[in-house]
Image 1 (tube, each protein chain N blue to C red):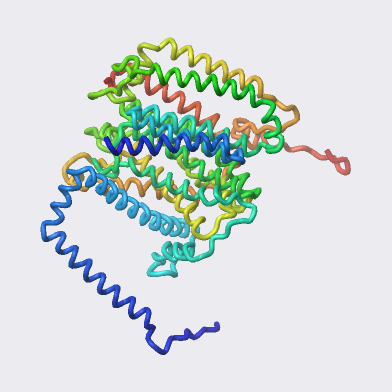
Image 2 (image 1 turned 120 degrees about the vertical axis):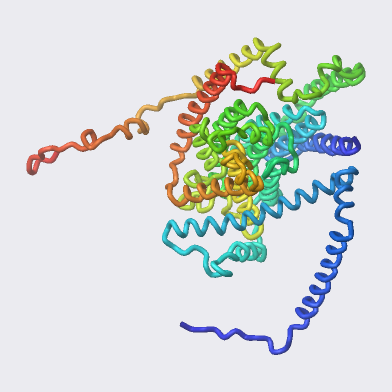
Length: 388
Length: 200
């Protein structure tokens, strides 16, 4: 094995030294400012201002959104690392293990790689749409999180039509893919865009009917109310996964199809379409497309958690378990669903496209349609339904 | 209130601009994308008026499903721009007449408009009843038969479309999943006594 001796600079690197000193000074100023802010009564005044004036409310929403975005982006880093480790274990490999201890810094190394490479725009591409498509995708993927309550009252916007908003935003997500596929002016991306459009429109139908059954039981379109409706004295047996078990399975499978995950990843089937609509994308533009997929997985698992796994509720509705903060329960449940997503990718071979369509239209749609009628009938006959 | 006004002007200006772009864009795909932007802006205006359900449904149905298919038709069409522009002068008079007619109607509405005809019915519901619940109550209680009639018409249209386009091509191998699943070694394997030098 040949080893390359690293060449070290003999003199201290002057710009680096200046930057380090400046960094330390800035850090000291920030620490002092923070100390003054928290222990000088500034924090309390700032908190009151954020609820009192219009500008304060605006600033509060801005800060809340920023915090949530940071959490989601960090979660995507955790997600990609965890998934690669899980697939590695299932394939009897090690997974990422080089960058940082146990390879935990691998996502950040990948991130730097994407940022530092040169984005290449094909000469024949429709430039405006080509650049706009990843922005549309990532904006819509992140926008879905505006209504998701991660704990009781912990939603940026607790709107009455939260379910419809989520449904609308996720149905808009297909545009990023179509625009990318068309604007690339290449055969594989266009084929992939065709597949995605048909696939997402088909599975949205069954997802819609599944959500309708949940709405019938909960009697509200508000996500917070849906979780509250699952708060019964039976704990985890009262969450909707058990009473609506077939719907839970259909929702999970449809969620795989909706996020273009294996076994339904026909959009980027590498053995047929190379990478589908992402073929022509490189560097930071590809990063945005990739980020969209990861965020979509997190969104779908959060939706599964809210609709079927009781959101932030404790699985056992008595004392020591109810003391645990709701956000912890939410994270445990959502990440369990993510874990199931990863498992499926490692286990299940890819579907053939006509079988995918058959599953959506001829199996899921009739079952979910029948279940809507059945659930409505049962709720009406027994009087368990919510009457306004 | 001021924020609402600001958002109204943003949405309204974007709506008019994108509607203009729909008819003036050279690339038909760009036209459809601007049309989608116009839909989204209209949904934003619905939200500002407190009609959150209508706004969301507009996005789900028109933008999320109808416009996707529309976009695809336009993408896959081979549109010749020169041919499209050819009849412009010829059809200008009749187009102008229709435009004037529509503009006149709009002007008449704008002049004679004095608020909502029945303010109580048009106003957003207040109190405990949400927008969605109020809409459902009106639609499924007062207008139930109209709702059923609309459903029947849509069903007829759907069956008609299927009947017109469904063709069973002979000679195409089709997959019968039930038959595949029901296959057993007894039905799938057959033992034959092959005569020497004769084959089957």
